[in-house]
Length: 193
Image (cartoon, rainbow, N blue to C red; front, side, top):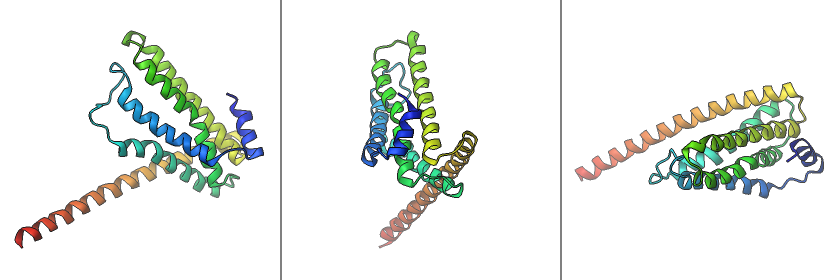
């Protein structure tokens, strides 16, 4: 509830737990799966009969790992004080509001009507804003940066994150084409034998 003092204590007392942080990231994945399947019909834009766990895993845990890795790479160059493990813990703790609000939204989506959608979306954006503020403070505290340096670091981190996502998409596409090519060759070989 008090991100400034909480992250300051986390840095000075080294009281963060890597396993609890990993549990929070796993909870984000679980809440995302539950939101895909259990969000009320009026608010659910997903097809519940087409659940793809890999997409949800990549869009939650994968993006988190990529963010932490990009931030570690950028802040290593920019004299950040945080280690990879500290960035992991601080960033995961910053995701806690997203997990909590996600659970509340699943329940509310099954109770509210479309006429009350304003409340649903207001709570959703409060959760996003709370998470963004916590993430900003977490990155600032873990690296002991100033306000401006934190903003610059986050901008470069997000640019790096975009590059990682583009490269991952290209590798996925090339790998898919390679598998298709090998499958076609195998089919031709077995057909002619």
